[in-house]
Image (tube, rainbow, N blue to C red; front, top):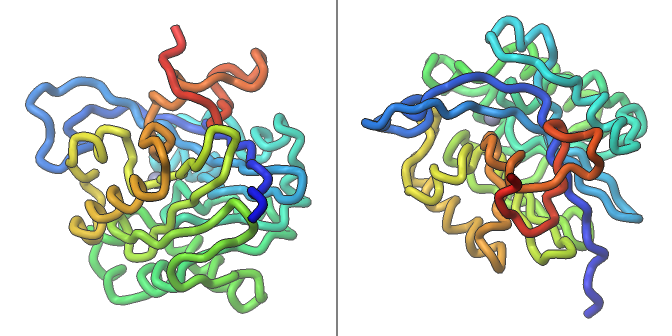
Length: 268
Ligand SMILES: [Zn+2]
């Protein structure tokens, strides 16, 4: 069997917000300290394929939810020579507002989504604020319109999208959260999205407080570890450390974009 073509993988940091450790772990943290939350979209590409993973929120949503907006995901992609207008495949890890705003920036894309995520976002649990708070009803409705327009590709569990890229249903954070596994020059890499907001959620074994099923979330950490050769190649979804452990592909992109298919280390 020939090895798949490796993917280059990038994180684009488009927004940030100040938080404390107590907000990021169930049960809080007695040593309350600041622990900011960064917001990312991701890009995976090789000579044959380009996948955008999540689309982030837009400036209006940032204002409403009091997040600091740093960069339009469209501009972030442009800095990597990707034209959002031309993107054909967008992977939606889940339908939370910080992962699916900006649909409109991808007029030609089809959206890869798990059956269970659409069921969850349009079903009975959304009547409870605890589960619905991170969804925007208008965006979910827009995604339903995309279903009717034939632009949503539904997946039921794990699937290989192309050689070297597969989706894995883990649930936990939401009912239908999926993660992305990629073949890269440093081996297998997993984009965890919100299966682990911070590396410490997974490493300390303490879930993030927004959770549909804590049991599934904890199983998800095991699934992710089984999908990589080196657990350092599991990329958490909102961790500012990601920006400190990987290099910008170009000095002009410092603080904005980092290349993830690399060995992580502390950059001074
Ligand atoms: Zn998120």
